[in-house]
Image (tube, rainbow, N blue to C red):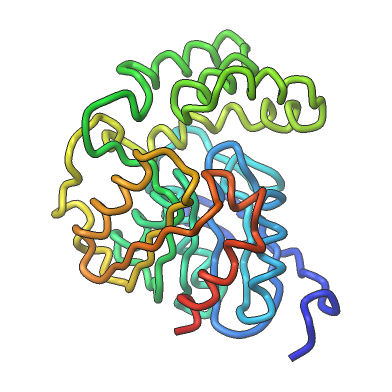
Amino acid sequence: MPKTKDRAPVNATALSRDGTEIAFERLGAGPAVILVPSALADRTDTRKLAGLLADHFTVLNYDRRGRGASGDAAGYAVEREIDDIAALIEHAGGSASLFGSSSGAVLALRAAAAGLAVERLALYEPPFAVGGGDFGPPEGFAGHIGTLLAQGRRGDAVKDFMVQAQGMPAFMVTMMRLMPGMWSKLKKMAHTLPYDIAVMGDTQRGRPLDAAQWSSAAAPALVLTGGKSPAGFHSAAVALTDVLPEADHRTLPGLNHGAVVMAPKKLAPALIDFLRT
């Protein structure tokens, strides 16, 4: 098989049930794998990982609705994002494996639980809160972000999401503000923050996972965590592995929550081994 660098990605769109166009890049050959981006991310963030996987799979690397080249519609509902994934699966030939990270992992999980034709399910650090403590955003966070966005304070919405929902140290956010290209990109996607908050639903309230909610996600699953990530991600991964019908948990040494963007070469081998099994 020719190497990915000799095959340019093909840009295409899939039409979701509500008529929204979902833009994606298709590259590689073999079984289909769809990459589901996390909050404040689009296909540019998963592009390096897509290239690494494309030597083994047909990779569909897409912009979630409201981001990048994809369209959007009024009246957001999580079910519409599941419909988007369904449209991509149809384009891929009727079935596909899914990989998602952070809230994108939860969206992928919701798609599998909704009964889509998911072959295998790879999830990197879904941010469930399964116990007490300060893991997860404060009460009323969705309303707070909605207020900031209504006031046009997109930068503040991004900052508060990163600090209060993602647990990022404030000094790191300050450093990101000094990177004009990066910060402007994040602010451009700020209006989609309520989408990811809705995807997470009530799973960040420090309670055990409801097995009945996820038991219909019957595809073989691999739940991954980074060895340098906070303990909350590991607790969530263990709890999710326990409630899924067929799942394993694996910790990858040296990685943290930003592995998809920062260390795709270290993440890819585990995904390849699992997805091509």
